[in-house]
Length: 326
Length: 294
Image (cartoon, rainbow over the protein chains, first blue to last red):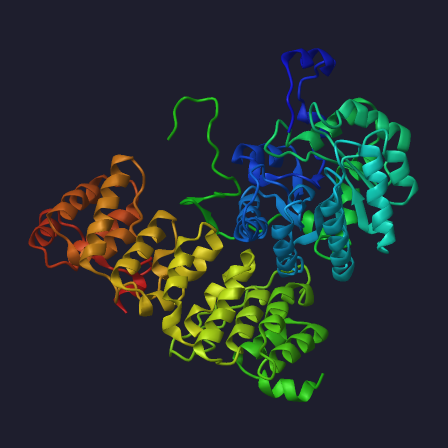
């Protein structure tokens, strides 16, 4: 979440109109996006822009949870309702399950959540433990980060690591130190929310480096283009982390479009906006290229709120430009 | 892993079908897990097998739709209706049929636990198995909960080709289910027990619904008039006689003619004579209500 003022406009650089023609025929995978906070308009726009799959990490939904039942219902929605909703727009929905760092600080509740996790992490479509890691970098956060690393190791699942906004560089180093201390293979760990300051160490130590393109508070995509020019595509992936804050569910295709305009090769774009994320999370055994290449089979029995969602391969569309609603 | 023992325990219609659709290692894993359930029906083991089925049964790229008719009758005398099920769904339901009859509290707790933590596909299998659980009467509330589901495939598996609701829901819940089925554009003719459970209150609610659809200039599912047919009164007749002429759906006009022809409501009979509706219009062959008369 972020706060900003109109004057921030000035720091946003030259405006380039959105032109998805630049990335026509591309396939995108957003490995970090919180769809529970997004609307059906977002799903439609994402599908139109070429997003074929996404990963929804379990996170903090804004309102702190006060009981275990709301955690359970949230996890269930990630493997149930939200997965279904996504499928209605032709987008494959995967998730990572974990106790986020912020709520790790409620220790009484965190204990109960830890008991709940094994019921979810072996489910179909659960591609990792996430997003876990540090926020305030408290002792409680460290405790539950470590416990969940052990869980990931036991289940053979990749880990999606959230790195803190504050004291980021140190927090990122520490997250990696601890993962190694627990014997995790760096290739099973995706370090998220990198910046120019953190990327080198992450790549040098053999971890995956994810970048969140998020207005005002995280990376801008012009910076991303520079980073890819400097480091190349290996083990780098882009995500939107779009959530309840001012964020952009089209961050991945938009960044790809900017890369096209900046002369970055198609092969590189495919890797950082699709292939690398798929490879990293395919290590869960719950996701593979073949799955994404297949169009979602729309079971004609799947109806949504009284609508046959797909009629002749098309979901019903509201006409946002018309004042008539029928 | 003793394959001989497990093959004895798994040699039924569903087991045979699964065997023919799975490769050897997957079948061996599944049959030994299911065969071993009777000896070790602990919630932990069942949950693990039930949850991890898709990982073990990766059946290649071609999705298989298996239809077996009614291959299994449950303890309450109801049968599974297997129409175009995936291998995983069939395997999951098969596993559920093999959970031994524990005492009622333990059995219900175990199955409810699976519901509580179920993901989408797991829920589909769990609801498909409603007719064949032990303690058949214990699942009424669960059945209603499934009908309330917002996930189409889950709702569908409770409503269509599932004999549980017709046998165990009270009239109010049954009517809710049928109304919901119309609202969600389900395959109405595929609802088990539609004719046996048809009733006046349902016909009245459906008539109200038809008026609402008509006012909104939305199409009306012709099957609605088949259900209203045996209970035609003045209110239903007014709209039906109007739509018998005006409806843009030929099938709706035909359904109304059929309903009139089989009604003992005098104005309906008079209507057929006065408008010289051909008798062929009231035949049901080739229509969605073909099975209605059986």
